[in-house]
Each structure stands twice: as C-alpha cells, then as structure tokens.
Amino acid sequence: MRRRSLTAIAITIGIGIATSGCGNGSSGPSSGGPFGSGAEQGTGSDQGSGGAAGSPTSTVPTPGPGGTPPSSSSGSGSASGSSGGATGADGGGTALDGRIVDYGEALRTASLKLVGDLPTIDQIHGIETATAATLPTVYSGYIDAMLADPRFASQMIQYWRDTFKTGDQPGQTKAKGAPDLDTAATFAAMVVVQGQPFTNILTAASGTCPTFANGTFTAASCTNGAPTAGILTDPGIQAQFFAHMAFRRVRFLQETFACSPFPAEYSSAPTPMGQALYTSPWPFTSIAGGTTAPINFQDTSAVICANCHTTLNHIAPLFAYFDMNGKYVAGTIQVQTPVVPPVTSQLSDWLPAGQQTFAWRDGTAVTDIPSLAQAMAADPTIATCAVNRVWDWALNRGDIVGDLATVPTDVTQTYVQDFVKNGMNLKEIIREIFTSDDFVRF
Image (cartoon, rainbow, N blue to C red; front, side):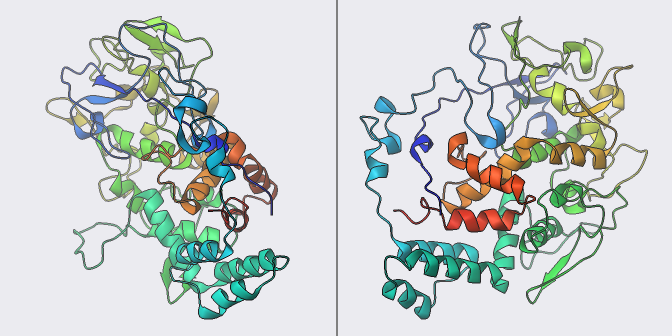
C-alpha cells in the first residue's frame, strides 16, 4: 500500500456562474440539476461563461483534467492557511496528521460499499486478532473477497445508476415504447466486474444492453438501430436526456466522463468581447449565429454563448437522430430548436454552411458516434475522471460535478498512472483505493 496525502483536498473555491439567453428572442434561467439547461427546456437560455459582466480582463478559471480544481478562479480562497478546511487554520495539516489507522472501521465502510452489507463476524474477529504486521494483509484479503463476491456486481450497477443518474424505478409502469433505463448501468458494471478495459464503456460495438439476474450478466445487444458505441448509443441514456437540440445529451457525456461542466475548452489567449471574454480556442464564427439564425450562438450581449457552444454544437448533431424513446432514426433529425413555436432542428441551426463538421475537441475531428467514442477514450481527461469518481465514492465525497467534489491532481495522480498501465482495469483501481493509506485512516 502507498501513502496518499489528502492535504490538497482542503481547497475553498469561489464559483461564479452567469446565465443568459443566446439570442433567440426569449430568455430564462437555466434549469438546475445535473445535465439540464434552459436552452434544452425551451427557454432559449443555456449555461454560459466568460467572466463576469463588466470585467472583460478577469482571470479565466481553466478547468483541470477529470474534475480537478480550476487552475485559477477569481474570488477563490487559498488552499491552506486562513481558508481553513482539513489543513487547519494555520495551514499546518494538523487535522490530517491527527488521523489514526482503523482497519475495523475501514472494513465496515468497504463492506457496505462493495457488497452492500456489514462485515461478517469472522471478518471482524479476523481484524481484531491480527497482529500489527499482518493487519494489512488480512484486510487486503477481505477486500479481494468482496471484489469476488457476486454482490459486488449489484453494487456496481447501483454505482453506475448513481453516476449516470438513470435507472428504472421498481414497480413503475413504463410508457409505450419506453426503453429499459438500466441497461447502461448494467453494461458499465459488467465491464468493471469482468475486468474489461474501462474504455469499453464508451467504445464497445456490441453486447451493450445486457441483463443481470441471480448474480449473472447476460450479454445482449441494443435494438434501437444505432451504430453502437458503448453506452453512448444506449436507448435508455438517449431517452433519459432527450431535449432540445440534443444539448442535454452532450452535457451528460461531458459531466459524466470528463468530470467538469461546460465550457470544456479554453484558449491560452482569451479575447475581450462584449462585456466578457471569449475563452474558447474555436473560431468564433464556427457555430451558427447572427440576427437571422434561429438561435444566435454568437450573441455577446451578456455572457459569451460561444464559450460553451463552440464545443457543444460540434457534438450535439451526432445525437440528434435519437427520438424521445432512444430509437435511432438514420437521416431524420428527431430533436427540436427552441423557437416559438419549436421546429425540427436542421444542421444549420448548430453549424454554419461550409463548417458543418463534428469534433470532440478543437483539433480532434470525428465523423460519427463510434469515432467520437474513440476520441473520448483516447483523451487523458477521461481516465482521470474515472479514477477521481471512484476516489470520491470511496471517500464519501459526493458527486464530482453536482457537489463540486473536485479532486486535486496530486491526490490521485499515481492511481491514474496505474490505471493506464493496467489497461484501464477499473476494478484494480477500486482495490488499490480501498486498500490505500488514506482509506484506512480516520
């Protein structure tokens, strides 16, 4: 086991969020909660960014990889000293230094998370009677047994249901044509339990709609007609996040797998524009806009809509062909543009003529959803995010985006390196975190 420092966890971050309409003649607040936005709900507004109005020279808070804190943030507190937190009022790390090793408490916590039950009497006695020299080995053996326990699969399904914010409700009657909302979480759990590469959750071309019963996964392919790419084309996911112009579907991908909200990209040389800063590396005119556009994504009257939408608009059209039940209708867009009255979206609503290409990020072009999945799988941020989510789950720190439970890079850097070296086997990283020094200290 390796010593992990939690000192960097104690960070106070001041967050400023500005929202405004993106030039379609209507405005309203963005909806709260993960993966929601005003533009997607028909108000014509969406999450924006680019600095506070009236301060175009503000420092731009560039997001860190995989849910790490921003590299700078206007109004943020310091990481230690007077900011308080786990490092103590004097910045000396006294709270962390005061932790003690308690394998009994670690065993209880791990057992509840990994198998959904309290430790057995034999396990408790095993910890109580072990010597100081043998305690780590005894405890690690119990963790291995839990990871091999059939109940671990059920816990993983729940983990992914919580992460994806989806899942069928027991006893709930489905609407006609509604898809299974559990297949995405079941497939992700199967990948983890079976020790498959984590990237299969994004890129698998078949078997992505399995079932789970009596402790056993049964592989099955989805039947919604999509060009399969892991859970990206899962009918339940597409139905759950159905909304105007497919923006909510893209926010799901960004927040779930990159562990940060939009804006997703930042230029090294932000440009003052209107009352704020244009911070995206994309050309400003690479997305639809102007007074004749249904939605003016080039609006600068309040926040800079393009800061988010230069990324959003190059991904969203790929998911526009899924209908409200997650069925893929090739060649026919199924989402609407939120004008009054709403109309079926056209590609020109997202991207101007002559620039209608798709990309995961500026400079990372894609052609379809499977190639988008491959681009995501190759992005180091995705690996960091996967590890950081496990860290937060293990340490009871809440959701990395919804609860702002960001993780400093130096806390999980070694785990991320091990994750990449082991072929992105997330089950091995779960074991590593649950047997780490930080996990057994209280």
